[in-house]
Amino acid sequence: MAGDVASAYRNACTHSECVFMFAGHIPEDNTIIIDLSAAFGWTGSSETYGILGGAVAFIHWPCTNDAHLRDFYNYHWVDDHVNVAPDTRTNCIDIDCSLRHAMTVVMGPDAPTTINSRPGVTGSMSWVSYSTPLPARLLCQSRRF
Image: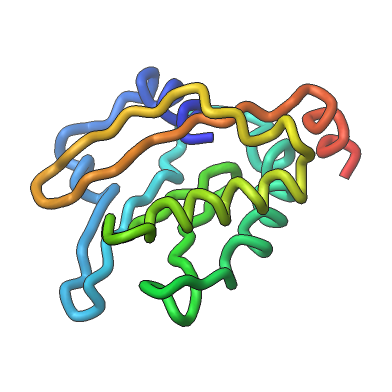
C-alpha cells in the first residue's frame, strides 16, 4: 500500500521550511514517528481505504513474537501500514507474515501481492518497502460502506 502514497508524494510540493515536520524521534521511548498524512489532494482516499485499513490494523496490531511480547508496532493511517522494528532473528519476517495474514482475512487471498520490494538504509535504520494493490472488487465493496 505504500506505493500508492509514494506515487502521490512525488506530485506533492512540500516547502523546505516544513519538511522536517513529517518525521520525528522520541529518544525516551526509542520511537520513530513518520507522518504520512500530509495533504496532497488525493480525494476519496479515506472513504475508499479507511474501513478496510482499519480492519487490517485491528487484526494485525495485537499479534506478538519473541521480540514484541505485548504487540507489534503498527502505524496505521487510512491505507498505510508502516511497521518499524529491529531486523533481528525472524522479527521482520514475523511482522510481515502477520500483516499479510490480516490483509488476506479482510480482503481475500489476492490482496497481499508484492509489487515492489526495495531494501533501503538510512543511518542505522533499514527497511523493505512493499506495495499492495487493492483489488477492484474490494474497492467497490468499500464504497458501499
